[in-house]
Image (cartoon, rainbow, N blue to C red; front, top):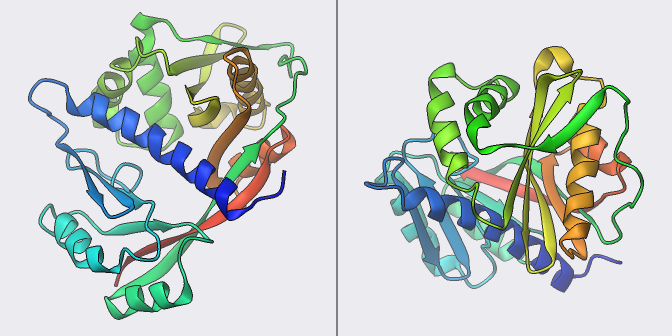
Length: 267
């Protein structure tokens, strides 16, 4: 498979669907306590979660040439919420003229982010280490999931309850599967899989800092790939910070870089 603009659009659409599925599920919690809002601006979707800090859930995806007339509205949308403006731009869908337009509006490129894919996921045994066991998370284990999640991502402990609630609500959704990794019965890592339209997305995954470099993420990647294959997926996609350990682990598992997104923020 070569990465054409059309294929890149398929990958980007899958990425948008993952975040949309997650946030709309959180939004329907009674009273919308997280303050979720998802709004369309031309070809783009702007995601906002007022009570969950950070860029993961507060970002714009899908912008392309022709959306210039919506940029002021997008900036206003986030400014009125006191949330930083963050645009994720995919190569092939924005021109140099569009980038110049953004620059004139006071935005600039801040970072890069890798998007990876595998068209032919490996069928090999997922047991990468005899002491590592990866299994599906049980319904009563989301407090444990949240504890590993917050520690693994270096998040404040007070966010644990929110992480547990915001993931538990997806447990009965057939598109979502949660995993727990153990070393000799000690919980050490978590991973999430989203499947839709024959595409499997390796969503959030992390390992407790003291248990890193033991092959846990590799085991989680391969377990989720195996599940995606069982569910009839023809394509596996994921994201990682460019050049990160996560990206390296995915490449070792047979994934390839599809493209590198440009992250733009306000000056």
